[in-house]
Each structure stands twice: as C-alpha cells, then as structure tokens.
Image 1: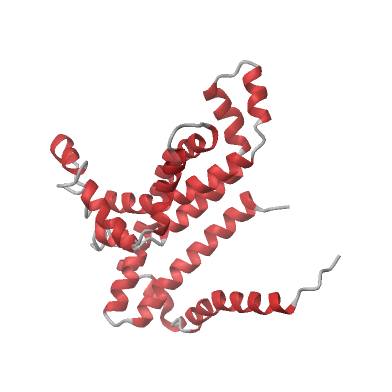
Image 2: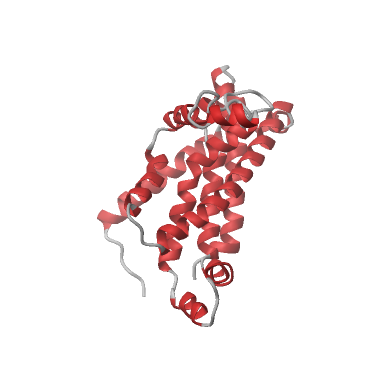
Length: 261
C-alpha cells in the first residue's frame, strides 16, 4: 500500500539528499576528463593509492582481531564499569582526528608511555612509518567495528548459543561455530565501515605518521598536498579516485553481505 508522504517531511528529505549529492556532482563536473588517464598514471598517485589500500586493509584486519572479541565482551559479559568502557570506545568517534594523532604520539611515540618501552626493548618506533599509518587508521576506525558487531550480537537470538552450551559445547566452540556465523552480516557491516573510515583518515595520520611520499602519504594526504600546491585539477583527480574506490567497495560488499529483504 502506498503511503502519501507529508510535504513537511518530503521537502527536508529532498533537501538532505541534494545536500549529500550536490558536492559529488560538483566533483564530477570539475574533473579534467581530457587529462584524467595521464594524471592517474603518475607515480605519486599510484604509490599513494597502493599505500592507502594496503594500510586500510591491514588496519581493518587488525580491528577485526581486536574488535570482535571486544564487542562480544560488551554484549555478552556483565562486569563493573561496562558503561564506562563502552563510552571510552566511542571517544575516537567524536575526538578531533588531530587530537587523536597527538594522543598517539604521547602514547606510542619514542618518548611516549608505551612507545618508549617498545623502542628500548624491541627497537620498534611507530611514528612516521607505514606501521604508524596503520596504527592511526586503526585508532579512528575500531569504534565503527565494535559498535556494529555489538549491535549485531545484542540483536542475535541467544537461544542458539544456549542450545549449543546445553549440548556440551564450551565457550570457544560456541563462539566460533554458533556466534560468529550468526552475526556474520553484522561483522561484515562493521568491517566495511571500518575499512571506509580507515581509507579516508587524514588528521591522525598526518599528525602521528607524517606525510612522506611512498612511506606514509596516503590518498587523503596526497589530496591535501596537491591542493596546497595550487593544483586544483590534480586534487580533483585524486579525490575522484577515492570516491570511485569507496563506492565500488561499499556497493560490492553490500550486494553480497548486507542486502536487507
């Protein structure tokens, strides 16, 4: 049955849609299509894109390893201070990325709380390295994964887990054979959000890892540097690449994992 949409709802809804679409249309309209291929094959562009795809993917895997167990802990285990832990996890969502980068330097820098120990004990220095890019991206992207997976766990029917426990399965077997398949769409959704956020990370990355071509210069940083140099067309081309990659990955994963009935 068709529902007649009230005008007071329809008008702001259309304006909101235009607000989101218009900048993308503007980007496409200002793209230098005649020299697009030439710009896309420039070594700096290829290197930045390769580094962005690599670091965002590694960051997503890292977040999956840490985030899924953390989400399970928040959703399934009652412990003192759980609300505080959940609040702390969401801090990077509202924290200015540059502030996050400074916090990472103070924690994991060569003179940081943990970074000094890593440097003296293992000779590991994270700032201004490719590994530092992964750390910065993971810091800002992990909350997206945890929130999505925790929501999926809370919405899942716990009777399946209870049945598995009744049949003699231990916690680990129940988690790997029942819980994970049950919330797989939620994990996929969280991974997609995590990957997309890592791909677009800028502030924490440039503060903690710097902007060194071929080492820490991801696509957002390349866009910023190109824009600062006065090459607007180059910045548009780089932005277009990010837009195409993001839309392609998100659309492909949504069709496979996240399509709602």
